[in-house]
Length: 234
Length: 234
DNA sequence: ACAAAAGTGTTTCTCCTACACCCATGC
DNA sequence: GCATGGGTGTAGGAGAAACACTTTTGT
Image (tube, each protein chain N blue to C red):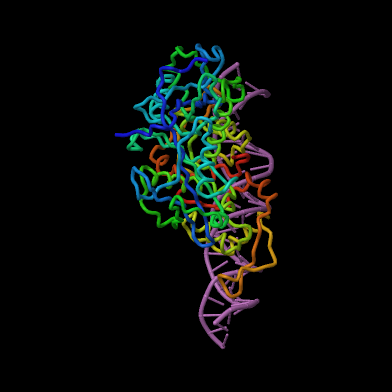
């Protein structure tokens, strides 16, 4: 079969913005590059798109290489296409953001990539246009989380109300009234109360909850207005 | 400077999903291909990414070639990367959706591309994965339009309330109460009443309004909840 | 007993929703 | 004078926001 012979072909990469939540802080997984260019600097995890891969395949591959995780929440952030974004050679990057359960990750951590979790407000300066990618990913997540319950993707199997509250407060960079928050949360029927309590963070202890996965799936698209006046959505 | 010599390079294209509104119907601008493959079939307008172009440049170039328009609302829809999406050769496509003032377009129409506006509900079957692109673009616009006043990008300089109402009804595939709609619209201070009336569509005539561009810019990010229960947002 | 975090109820107010009639004009 | 689409107001209800005290338990 004939080809589009006169057209230019380009390098295409994927970069993954990986978010996690340890129960207190929202975090980002970064790697320290042990190769040039920009060796020693912090960076998102990425990789080139291979001939037999879709971009989504590639992002999942990269994610699995770094975290060992599969079937995680993954969404296209945006394409970054500035001509000189990579100093070695023009490379288009398709950014993907992922929401992972940080606890699942820890079990399978590999140090091969010098990976480290950074609190979202303490992310170092990153290579190339990776700072922009992170910024865009934060915006997108905030946007989506105001309308859909995606933040549950960050939580472990059992979690407490104060934890979810902290998570929402960090994602939306705000403070929320815990009474109103709980009421609204319960009204979604998304969470199921457990018998046990988490006694690590308080003397009284906070009840554990589990996500009702059936409700999660069925209500995913109709979770509107959970955050009623999300400011600064872009 | 050295290159990433071992990596594969790919063709990258942009495709534009161009929306317009003629005062009654939401429309999509399509071209009839006069070249292979799929000659004679309907398609989105697209083009290959050139070496010295960013994807956004390319989308703007394609848009200008077809419509003569510049500085139009343009946003990345998504990357489409299925390996076999183009039967000739693997090509990654970055889809962009544009909202244009169809009246500006008409003045500059070129027939070179056999371009035609189709009512959104009467779009023919398109080549490759272009049907999916249109679907995704509709979703994205719906999503965004529920929170931001982007639909004004589709309106001519002077427009009437019944026209905006029709536009919203078509984008959200619903019917809206005109009293509640007007009230909400006025409360945004986005539109300025004119003296003249549009007498084309009724005997009484409907007052023209203009967009208050200063308010539009300043309130763009804070237009939340204009559509209070948008269904089927994805 | 006290410090520290968890958990819970009520009132107010805003905004959404539902709903129906008069108006201006061309024919 | 009548048909057509444009324009306006109100009342009721649901949900958001504001707000403070009691509970549990480890030390």
